[in-house]
Length: 395
Image (cartoon, rainbow, N blue to C red):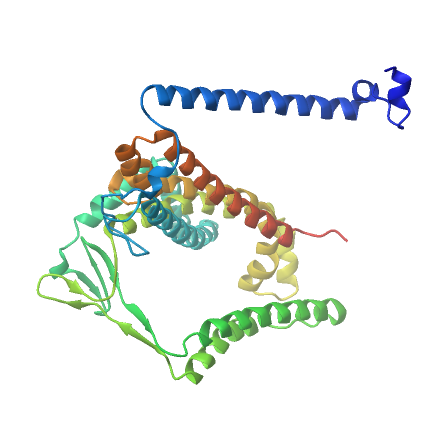
């Protein structure tokens, strides 16, 4: 077949080499093929080597009985459960400490970041010392320190009491447990409806401000909507919520929700460690906004708190959010250090006891890598979406 015959269909095959675009795609395709063949050969070689030493590749071990207990469970589990269920329990524990850590680290980070710019010399210096010390001490040492402090607290019989409702001891933190009655489902429905109404009102207020210049107290009204509507639904349903308050027994606390010392130590260590980095990000974001913006706001009669909330922070977020995403990812991955103090996350269950019992090292590691990769990708997708939502639009 001649080149002319190949060209009769309207496409000249020589363009695959002479055209830069097609040549680039051709090289990328060839690279993907070579990489795919290389991965297949490596995997096949590993499977053959494992079979030669009597280790079969597969994930059937997930259906075998685990034979070990887990000290913190968000779903029913016992030693007769499967390795797969043990991995799910570990995954839920990982998500619990990661989500709680992200929430607390974000709150503390923003507070510390703003406080470091405080005109109060003492407050600014205290925050500076905290940030520099925390950032320059390895996280593992901080986890061990928090755990050592917690297990040295008084015993459960002599627990530190906060208004006789929350108790702190060497067995962790015990808080009241909610007991939901009939009709409580109306409260979360009202809460979601309140959020939707707040979003609609905020958009309407913004359009009105652009058209007429009138400024509505969006924050105050939305706060009233988000808090008021669920409260009204709660009262209308007959207050279907009660609390099981922990009580001191003969030797131990009874009732409530016990937060184990390993979880409390991990939560505190991850939160305060990551908050130090977030504080620096917030400080840099605020300082990136030109001081003329603040002076202009003051000249219009805006008070400092409204200037920070309405002028400075919205502009600073475009600088804050991208590195903030990295800190969220780091916190989630750093939670794998929990194995050092016995917190049963997915690294301790699937990558620890299960791996040692079954010998399926490659499968366990692959599953853990997939879990952390999925969490990181989902976090990045959400934060990138949020970053696009708050970006400054040039007009």
